[in-house]
Image 1 (spheres, rainbow, N blue to C red):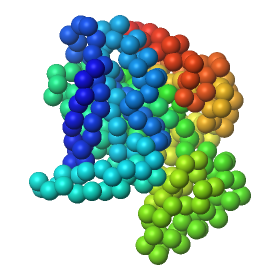
Image 2 (cartoon, rainbow, N blue to C red):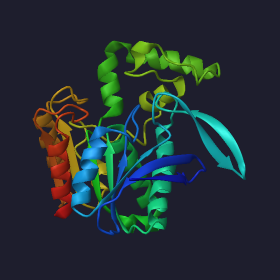
Image 3 (cartoon, rainbow, N blue to C red):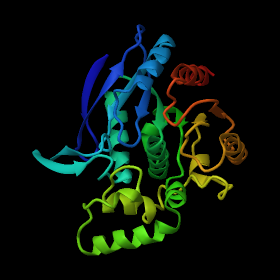
Image 4 (spheres, rainbow, N blue to C red):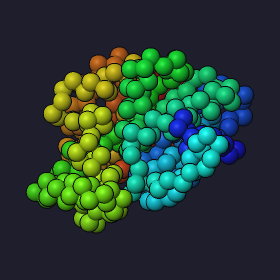
Length: 292
């Protein structure tokens, strides 16, 4: 293991860990964590060990959405600026800056083949970033050799289902606070599964056009997912998973909608949203996908 420090493309200072295989390799799996998380999870260690055995390095890093709340340091024209971030305050669209910054750092370190792996909100960040890179015809796309999405969540749809009749009530409350200039105030605790600011809540509930691409069961085209041209691996659990449909039904819906000829879409029986106790099985399936 070795620590890496790098800058997002907008100057935010980030850090992470690379788990190195015994072989000198130019292939690496880059992991993007989800809500309130970080790069120090047992799941990362287990997947890293499995991919290292397959002569692939593994990198996970703390993006600006890590933990509940934190101050991030942004370098602008040689000056340091502090900004409030973390799950409670992040703007998910800024993940583009983090992921591209990490890819550029890995390229600088000599890696050529990069597999992107996201968990939960990390999946949303990867799909959004991949789509933006394609729109820009960015040259780094040629380095992305596969996309791995673990427990992709339909965030707007799940939020509406979670809040039910109170959804519109909380949107109105957030908009009133926004008009008062109170975007960084926290929403009532019942409004989200974690403490969340007005700004972040509105990104998920109202200003979600760019991330509202996982309407499973409603959108048969799944355009942004079908925009992924490299091999695509998708998994969910079927116990306490953050999905509206049963896992087997969801897998059928997505499999029938995704046209990618190199897709591998399934669920892991007995696994929860975090794959606790099923990390080894998940890691073996990821390695098998990469080998194919």
